[in-house]
Length: 190
Image (cartoon, rainbow, N blue to C red; front, side):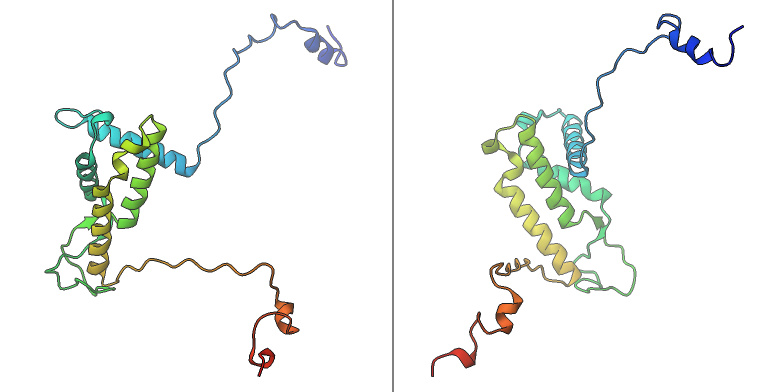
């Protein structure tokens, strides 16, 4: 019988054939995709599945702006944004006071982001940039119309955000305090 002090030595001296069989080395897992990359892949797969479900099925290389517009309208059934119709009593109200039967649709921002991801995915999957159907004028016009109609339905006009001007990094606060920078009435010639 082996003594307790030799027990570890006996285990260490076992040959690999006597111990548990070794598992074959699997290749390392690919790095996890970013949230954007995962969403882009999911969106691309969903769009390709939509095309395959068409009668007759459409290959991505045969896809045109009409297929994309149909896809965007198909997605409206899964939307979560209430868009009031022109005849609705809440049309144009920022915060409606009650419920109505107006449809839920995809929000303009969601559609715009989706088109951006699909545009990138198209090119990543071998599509030529100059033939990218997601970059077509018809798609841009559709998105602009959706944006404008949703803004009117909410009573909030869409305004493009202005970019903030960057502060001059060469100018610091102490320059202003000691009068060495900037223009003021006191340092203008009379």
